[in-house]
Length: 444
Image (cartoon, rainbow, N blue to C red):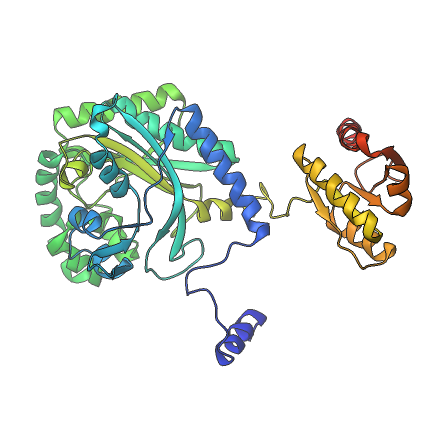
């Protein structure tokens, strides 16, 4: 039994409270990496002129049931639902496209210049089997561009997603793209697909046998190996596109070619919901297998109408942040080191404490991070703590410094003058710290 399993067994036996299964605490070391990814998402959205939208974590269950169906796996098996004290049926949001579209309708965004370009970053919840990169509480960054059916908007959203991964340093990424056309194209395709699959019904997986009767398009993206072999020779939806649907897809791929974004036509990428139309795509690491998709998107021209709004086209994507972090950490592109403070303050004596508190706040007011060493400890112990903190310098304020109105600076790292001790007037402390930091950059 390894240490982790033994710890879990011990905590269960001792009835120690833990985070719910499939949900986890993000500790300071990982939150640094998470913040870097979030900042990159925000910056990429900014340069494409997308604006942040924040929707409730809890939505009326109808937001999802109306769009995917009451009897769908998402509603019946994967959503966290509850009745509030007023008798309203609510759900923790499992995704955000429907919530953003609900907000678009509710706040009359149809009256704004179209398309409305929005982005979000937040937590979502699905009762799913936990595995690497997949949790019951997950984090996603997403883009929604609502109000235009122009194929160039599909390409813009794809290029934003591509830019995000490149900005994070994930360059070995494959883009798979397909078109599922519109309802008229799909009806002819589904007749042909159903006829083909019924020949192999007994060989299909249990899930695919069920889907053959309810939603045969979902069999195309089955992860079952036998299903995949059968699907290889199945009809391809691109062969059934109407002239208009084919022209839309051609415009998208032509824009991607102009942007220098490589892609593969991937017939296995489909969406099983009627409100999806035209372009669908997924990004995954090159050479990856299994549940490796970083993020995917598509056009959903029928979604807002399903939610009770006017017929309004839209396109967007969502990308899983946990999957991104796994890839960044595996490649050594990002680390989980906690950012150390700039200054570690050592106060000796009661008078030294009062002066140190004042000086520390003055440094913080100038954007310099300060960690207080705490009183009641020896100088040797405090200097050991200062070195362990990773701080750039230690500032010592004792009785002598209080009397002289000075501050003793001890450089701890990253400087050719690391053995140098300085004393400066307290009024010059901010300038002295800034000068030492600047010199360190030059030395580097």
